[in-house]
Image (cartoon, rainbow, N blue to C red):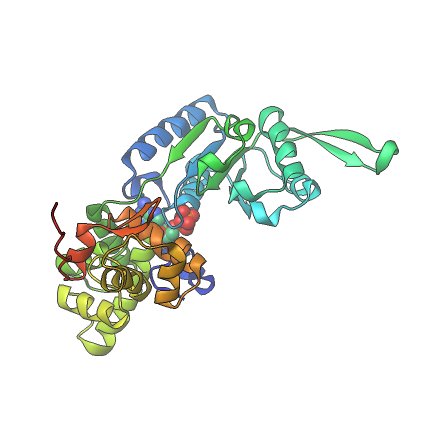
Length: 334
Ligand code: ADP
């Protein structure tokens, strides 16, 4: 259980729901996405019709589910929420599609993880608002066409590049969600603190934002842990000192690296002189699985410019030495 994991944790869903912005105007950051989506939704409302299908791509915790709910709210439409992995058979999808109301928003999270037959059914549903329900098996099977009411599909994926082009092409609008700037995360923290009724001074919000890895979900999670600390160990107010001390307890450093991230970076620097070193060797040195190092720790270290993956192995950047307060070995010249 990592405090800085961007995936949602089962028992935080209720508190997350309470912190979700409800309207586009309340949604912080992503200025381009907001502007474009605003146009799409206004135009659809003006036509009195249903909004085009929307594809949201971006890392976990950046607000895809939140935006899908905002789309429904702005259209005054109900929303149905499901996910690719939950739809294994085309029949599962047919059941959902045929029960949609006119104008309803269908949010399909992890849309790249749908089964092939379901995906093919979705093509026709998106384009013609029609599905063929197959009745019977083998040579006697027949396709019964079923008309669907117009609906808006909002698909979410961590990587739009993973989607087959025929599916990608059926979205009228694609939004790429970026990691948030520190100033935007500060606003997220301030807004959430108000909703949670915890007093935060401006530097306290800066401190939490700076450790949130560009991700609102992590910002909100760190805020809740810092709030606990403020209530137990201080007078309930989140200052810079309180936030720093609280996150030290949870081993999240000033840049958002946690124990695992620092172990990987520390081994690379101290045991291998900054590399290059192979992934397997590095993993053994850290005492973790290869996959954990590669999939859990490295993506953020690479994004932060602390580690590079090269054909010869993993290499630390000068910023990595500086971050851990270590001096790189003297390069022998000539
Ligand atoms: P995703 O679906 O991309 O994993 P979510 O929409 O579930 O992310 O967002 C995770 C949490 O972060 C939610 O509690 C949400 O309120 C908050 N959040 C995400 N984006 C924003 C934003 N732009 N402004 C304010 N809060 C946000």
